[in-house]
Amino acid sequence: METRKRLPTKNFWAMLLVPVLVLLAMGAKPLYTVSVGEEIQLQTVPVDPRDPWYGVYVSLKFEVEEVPESKIEPDVRQMMERQGIVPVYVLLQHNGKSHEISQVTGTRPSKGIYLEGNIVSSLPNQSLDGSIYQIHYPALEQYYVEEGKGRELEQMSQTGQLVATLKVYKGYAILTNLEKKTPE
Image: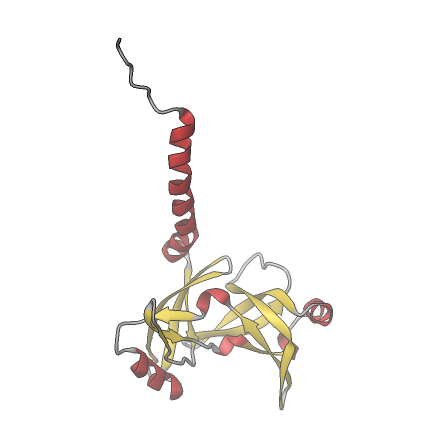
């Protein structure tokens, strides 16, 4: 009796292809942002922790994470009164070597450079100019560095000498480099 080998069915090939397509799709947005995104620089203030799984990284804080109430649109302020965390778009303007906040809005801008973030309404800090609110940018919190470089970056940061270079495309940002601030 002759036995025929059965060829795999279409369902089998689909089950093999789906995980591969999912993995490729996960990398599409970051790769596209790095290739066509607008390059900007932000002033940072990092801390140097260690992650046992990933190694040394610099936990970053940016100047654009603190926004005065005067730069927040009224509709965002109203949403902040009703909700704890509000998704926002932070419009940036070029100021010398780096970028700073020009306006915080609740609607996606049609032009200009902007970052997507979340403003926390319950944590205002008081300053001479009024309330300062914190904006959280999930994609920009950590940057992995070579062993031994974290402490050096932290020291540069404490003296205001660390600048982050990012690629930004439609609000999505990828941190590409940390470097010493060049004298103006």
